[in-house]
Image (cartoon, rainbow, N blue to C red; front, side, top):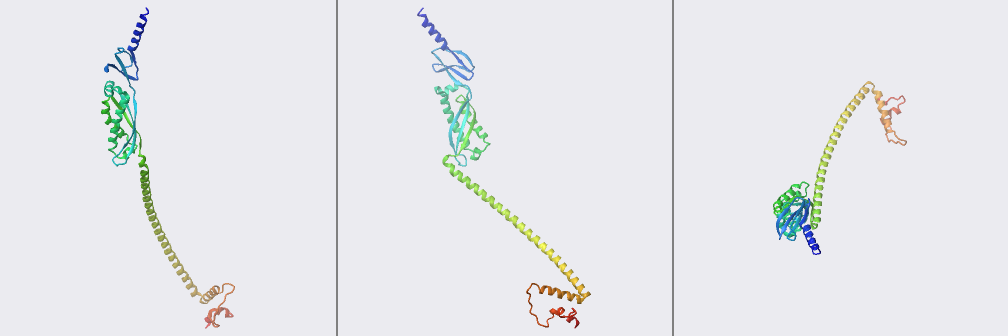
Length: 292
């Protein structure tokens, strides 16, 4: 009976080691002496030959791979540093095992890196930096993905998506690029100011011309009105003089006295027989000249 216990233990261990479970997140290969003898893609419990066969499991979920920053040179020779990542899935575990051997996921991702880096250089090197930096660069990412699909399929892998996370200038080019951008903006600002000054000069010239025209027209109208007023005044004076010459002469003399004798200390030097004070010297207020 004592000899049976070790046998039962060995049998039990053999039965346990013969069973294996594949869950819904993975696929499995059953290997016998390194050769694939069975592929398990559906979840469940399976049996293998203990000690002779082994089970290799691979993740069946969508996996993500970050690509190391890559320096590229677009068509305009403006170097850029691109940081990207890819999402992929193992679709053919048998081909995957044949392609990467015992290296597994790590070996596959190393080869994927090479494929994606080469395709990224080829696609981004065929366009300008403005196309890469624009928001409408989904087409470029699709081109990278489509270009890498065939090579990845040889590994038993399907590339689902490729995305550019960041696109920056190399550190040594930042200062020079910023200076060039600043110079371009200053040149554009100078051009805008020059165009603004030119437009302002045109507006000022038009305003000055309008002012001159308005002032000239106003002066012309004023001269016309002034001339008409002078003519009317002269007409009134002539009419008044014709009706009473003596009164008109007296009025003109008073006006002359009023204008000449202004202020407190007015002084005049006249000859004794001057006609200026005829009305003041006349006892009856009649000009001496008018009686002659």
